Length: 78
Image (tube, rainbow, N blue to C red; front, side, top):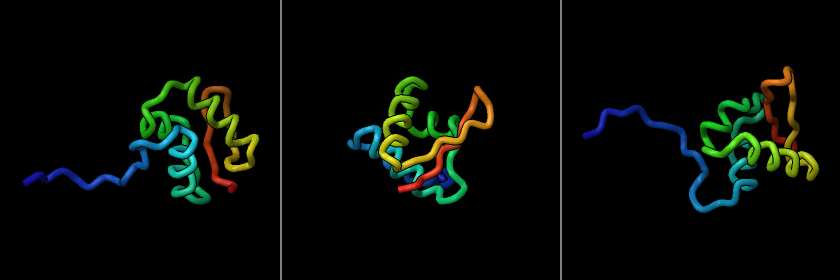
């Protein structure tokens, strides 16, 4: 019997990257999610994540807040 702590389900399996991002960000509500959290949950490169977020931002589904040049936080707006 495993004694590992339960983890939150991450909608990763079989979905396109854009759909995975929207699913994860929308679950975070008004708190949003940081760059580091998204990179860890999605296991993608920074460049792939940035391109996907730019696309979703253009569609009005997410808002990306850049408090510094090195990090950002993403909020669901859809």
